Amino acid sequence: MMLVIGYGNPLRGDDGVGRTVAEAVLAGELEGCDVVNVQALLPELAERVARSSRAVFVDARIGPTPGRISTDAIMPTDADATWQGHALGPGAVVRLAGQLYGWKGDAWLVSIEVTELGYGTGLSAPVAAVVPEAVAAVRRLA
Amino acid sequence: MTRTVVIDPVTRVEGHAKITLHLDEAGEVTAARFHVAEFRGFEKFCEGRHFQEMPVITSRVCGICPVSHMLASADAGDRILAVEVPETARQLRRVVNLAQLVQSHALSFFHLSSPDLLFGYDAPPERRNIFGVAAEFPDIARGGIRLRQFGQQVIETIAGKRIHPSWAIAGGVNAPLSPEGRDTILKALPEALATVTDTLGWFKRQLDKHEAEARAFGNFPTLFLGMVAPDGSLEHYGGRLRMVDATGHIVFDQLSGEECRARILEAVEQWSYLKSPYYAPMGYPDGAYRVGPLARLNVATTCGTPRADAELAEFRQLGRGAVLSSFHYHYARLIEMLYGLERIEQLLAEPGILGRDVLAYASRNRSEGLGVSEAPRGTLFHHYKVDEHGLLTWVDLLIATGQNNLAMNRAILQIARQFVEGGRLSEGILNRVEAGIRAFDPCLSCSTHAAGHMALRLQLFDASGVLLHDLARPA
Image (cartoon, each protein chain N blue to C red):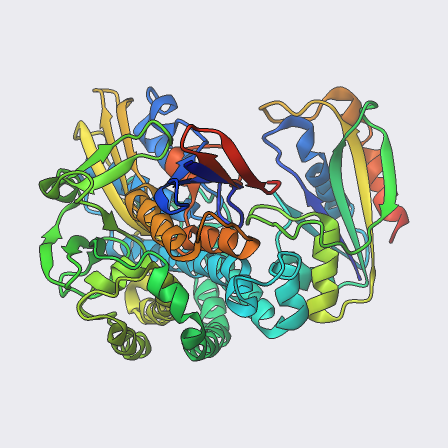
């Protein structure tokens, strides 16, 4: 089973694109796929990840070319060791899934480059335009 | 030559802050300050909004305790409407508040503080973190995750969303509890109870190892404030307020939110955005008081649930009168989680909990309302004044962490005096000072209405203000 985790803050413009993509994946009823939409990554997600065979994180990434999509493997990391209680990175969630639940699946990050992160809802035009392409990127991992 | 030590940022707490320690020519600590450097300003920018919007707006103050803000705000709104909230709605508010207490205490104990308790304060930072706990004590890490999930699941089941639900509103709540929802919660309770019971047992076995910290981490007499039920038992929503002194003697009892708030004044220090509330009759700073789990257990006559009452009796052996060491906030947090789970079970067993009558309808009938809830970190006051249209003309939020400010400053001074010798600093000392703050589980985003997460820095200055030593960690 593949788990898709869309995360970001939809009240900060393009930061919500990960959630928009995850919702679209959910609406498309991808077989054998579970979808989670969250504001931020927290340790609790590790258990959910551990119940999957593959975890796909979908997030906004600041970059010069709004709408550019990348798919990268995620490696476990403890880069968030000074975690304050708000948010972890995907590598930290993957690491916790392995440490706590013996998870041996693989993890991917589908990221969409964004520039508009001001207050407000809705995606900028170049980012909104690539949502179907990002959904396709997620579906290719299924 | 005198010096000042600065810890910036303070880690594993909610928000941004730094600590400064001031040393004299002999290297002895003369002063310690907890500086909170964030500001959010909800009190100001909420002016002009309608009071019925406030539960939704103010729940955004915090991602950890949005329910407490929602409930205090709804309580203030109830008073502006001047209605009687249906009993089912009052009980459901209690359940949701306790669920949030469980998940927030689990975050504080398991994710933020357990690395210190498990590895010791001198362990290297690369080991003393959540990943270190996961690697070496996976059962404890998994327990924390499951307890957090339980609390969040209860909130989602009843209030519709885990974080920032818009469920409690002036006059009641906007949705009743379904039988399926109740059964789902009841089914998950035994595992949560077992996790807390096991953790309490483990923690009590560790107490001897932390004797030095228990002696020095904010171990001094203050007043304590918390909510109690009419019979004096522990309460977190819909109760009255009691204050006790360090001997456990009752200073006042069964006061309404308005009566209690009238006895609290707020001092302002130029080096922090965090105000310093104090009990006015004793003056500033002698009127320092503490709120939160330790204070609640000190003010309550009993917990009112069997297993928590047995633990409370044992806890009380730590003090003659009130338990004074802020280190025991950790212990109190575990007992409160046990109480919260037992109380949720009791509340869900009440026949009226599935009632459909959960909202009283009215328009603005008063120009002022003060609401209170017990947030995980302590007593929370929301006080609003509105015009004839219900638009806010004045907002006052008195937050738990602010009420602990004077005690937190005294705690770091005590710790620094105990562990800093001859002006020498080490990572272990840095972490003990931080851990003294962490024991209170402060939420600076709540208490200053500030944005972002907490970070801290330790700086050492000489008598002339020259920076001699600077220990900083990235946020």
